Length: 220
Image (cartoon, rainbow, N blue to C red; front, side, top):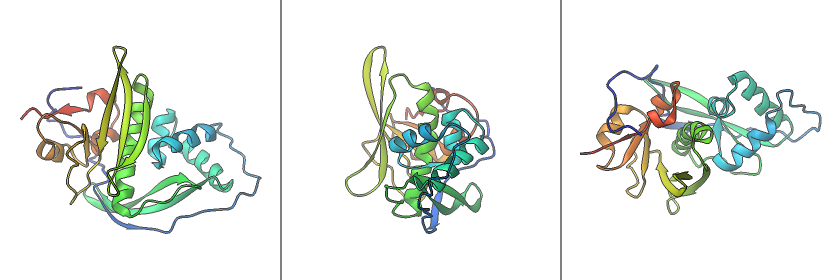
């Protein structure tokens, strides 16, 4: 973890800033003929059980593979009726666009586009932490019946530690009891993070590099 954020511009400034609309969830009944030629389908199902929902890009990061490989594995699971996907229309960086969010077939879709963007941002963090954090465990939770957050458990010098991770999107307030905040941009993180708390940003999580170098602490 770093004490202060750097001033350099993040790569491309991509983020899941604000959800606009949610498409219809796409589901296909299993035909028993789908073959996962990538060998990654089982790992993907394990990850979806933890993360609740993921983008193809986050899955590729978690699996340390190309996006095409992760996409092919997701498609195999979809043809087998094991996953569903939904298109999310959102403010992505400086533009409006859409991205695909995958989730287990026996799980419910996001409640709305804002929740989908939250899950996508949490998935970016999950993908990096899964490969880097010792004793990593992840659980998606709700703050009461409202926003989706995550609990990450890990070990530091043989001591069990837990972080509550919040991913506020534009027009949402940070949850006060969180330990780490994921904002769309680094600028928002510097301004909106409560003093003493840690923060990162979508645009940093998209860029290459270790997670520990992308988490900062607001001192004042």
